[in-house]
Image (tube, rainbow, N blue to C red; front, side, top):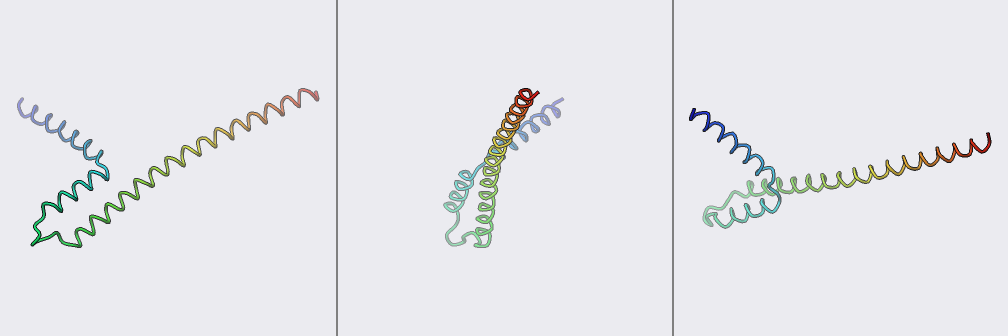
Length: 104
C-alpha cells in the first residue's frame, strides 16, 4: 500500500517536472548561464568548446521559437485569405444567380 502511494506521488512529481521543463524559455536559459558563470572557478573555467556548444544550442532554440511564431502568423494570414476567397466566391455565385434570374 505504501509502495503504491510512493509510486503515484513519484508519477505526479514527474508529470509536474515535465510540465515545468516544457515551460522554460530563453530568459530561464540566460539566468541559468549567468548563474553558472558566476559560480565557476576562475582558475578552472568551463571548457570553451562546451560554452560554444551551449550558445549554439541557445541560438538554435531561439531560431526555432522565432520560426514557430512566424509560422503561426502565416497560418493566420492564410486562414484570413481563405475566408476572403470564400466570401468572394459566394458573392460571385450570388451575382451570377441574380443575373441568370433576370435573363430567364
